Image (cartoon, rainbow, N blue to C red; front, side):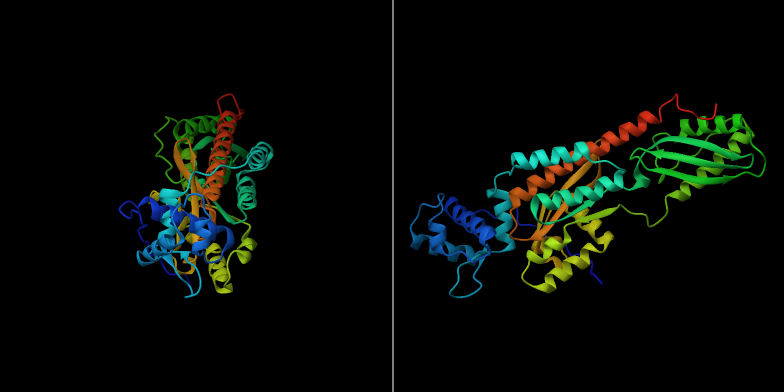
Amino acid sequence: MTSEPTPHAPARKGDELDARKAAILEAIVTEYIGTAQPVGSSHVAAAQSVTVSPATIRSEMVALERDGYLVQPHTSAGRVPTDKGYRFFVDHLATPGQLGPQQREKVSNFFTGVQGGIEDVLERTSSLLSDLTSHAAVVVGPSHEQAPIRSVQVVGLSPTRALIVAVLSDGAVENRPLEFSTEMDDETLSNASAHLQRIFSGSTLAHVPDIPKSGNSDVDSICALAKTTLSAAAKPGDHEPVYVGGPSRLAGSFDAIETVRGVLTILEQQLVVVSLLRDVIERGLSVAIGSEHGYESLASCAVVVAPIEVDGQRAGAVGLLGPTRMDYPAAMAAADVVGRQLSERIEADRGAAERSASPGRDTRG
């Protein structure tokens, strides 16, 4: 069982380094990300941004270790960055990454050609993001109960039975049976559909509004039953859908099998994944490193997150989960581009659903 997270505040402003120490730290982080081997002073001296003597480099590395930015795993080895070192690198040193032309074309072609409902798009997007970065990827989609209702229709099945059909802005369709105590004709069902459309359009299953009287008792009876039925469609415990792409990539990212098992256990718990990504975004971050996200089993991991925003509202997130030595600029660029493209796709699907639900559709007369 996973314990509740204990968030740690990331090192931000106030943890300042002079230009020389910053250049040395940048060289060490960059080298370690690429090699996964402790970095010695000779490698630092080869960096173009470092122009001081090897003796000065060694002295500054000792100071960086003393201040918590580096650690020396063995007395004969070089240094590796700590969470604090990575945080300074992300906040102050890393230049914004960009996807290469082939990667951008791959993303563009994917969202132009991907077919299917929102669930299929989200699942395949998680695989796309994993392929772009070689890390495990997570996509948290919008919950159906928060998607605005675009159209409502009462479809007659028999004089005493009907379906209430609600088309949501994310393309999902909720339909539930209605049973009437008396027979209802087509005109009454059509009037009920029109009344429900006026009241429910733009609301959500989580907050189905009260329905004012229409002046027709049969219409009011149908509408009251429809409200109760649709309200029940937003079941307690329904949560945002979670899709994981490339979980097998974790095996090559960590040395300890216990770490891989711990990460996989987290990924199997959808509520934890949703909470993890949401917490990172709500704290104003795009990256959580090591202990910052508060889950002990993820202490060797970094999480890179980008929001999904639809109609100006947060509607989910995309994320990457990998070792703390991940290529942060590249990971942040991939998450950002995929998050924005996915947001645009969901908005387009909602627009199509809205147009198909606009006046002029068949509502039984």
